[in-house]
Length: 464
Image 1 (tube, rainbow, N blue to C red):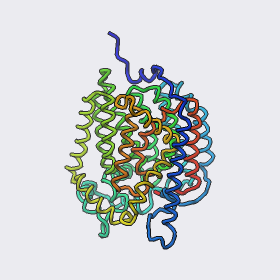
Image 2 (image 1 turned 180 degrees about the horizontal axis):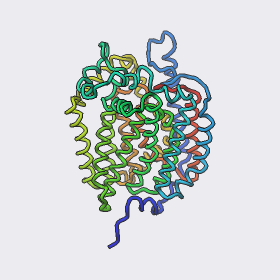
Image 3 (image 1 turned 45 degrees about the vertical axis):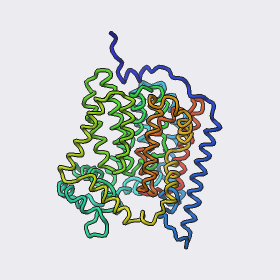
Image 4 (image 1 turned 135 degrees about the vertical axis):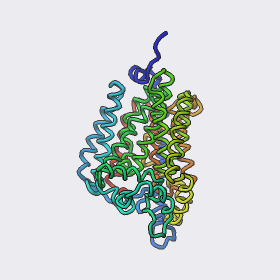
């Protein structure tokens, strides 16, 4: 009996898959044009609302993005352009030719360089070291947290605003896991904004490994190689560095990749199957304590479990996630209590005046900018082909689950504005759809992704 192939061997010597059809380019361009119209409409209506005396408050100066109009260049500008050119010219060929593990390592390093160079367009202090130190951010509360068990016990009591000991904006708006990350960094001697930003960028860059690795582990190794350069040059990198949502995206994407690894391990009879499944559950369980909205990543976890067809992996992941929930409950924080209080806190702030009728569609415009034109065109192809093997094709099913998560988040009304960063953990799972783009035009689509990121970063000063 022949030995079953491991995940690494599957990726190292993948079976050739059929090329994406070259037809449909006009439809792709029409989809991108429609996305441009959506963004332009959100900009025009938002600016109309921002005029004096409009009576409507959207609380965003450069709609639909949470940013200020500020054309500028910085120390990272030249490096960002050079990295983009290098990935566009050589990324697809290297991703196709290198041994899979080396390709993933190269993708991680390229993503790290791309994200850091984009942050440095705004300069060291404004773009990197000072980003997480403003009064609304997590680090503002870190010095006052001297007793972690007490912080967890009292966390919910400090969520609501207009009380003397209310948490600052981002701390109150998230479960305690997000704050704990920065407290733990401080405890091990990595004090201040520069170390916090470093941790965020290092974690956020894992997206460029986790997303294509998941696609490969679920049986589409050739598609994973096509996705890798797009995972590097995603315009979402503007917000991965250095918003905490980038860290959330990296942590949870790694959890989903480990779930896929566990499924592959059980299929191949590998010893790593059990620890990978448990680790997946621990990361995904911790994910819902990083941000309440990340409970929607359960849709992605179900998609991975369906594709892997190894329910032992899913059972281990569920056990690991429940262990995290139980640990926080034992420490004094119950997730549901925090969620109900944060909804109340949400409507104590600008969400009370930000109009749902505008943001329910302008949020989609904002996330479209972070996704980039290549994902828009790929999404068009995914929708067109959704009837053919949706439940068996990881490219299609992961994309469908991510799109569904975004739709649920949108209609909830709990993310009015700032979705270019808030929905990063969902949006990165639309990247596998880029494998549907025809090979002859992929470099042009990559260039469009890079150009979008560079334009946003050089024309706007993004918030948070």
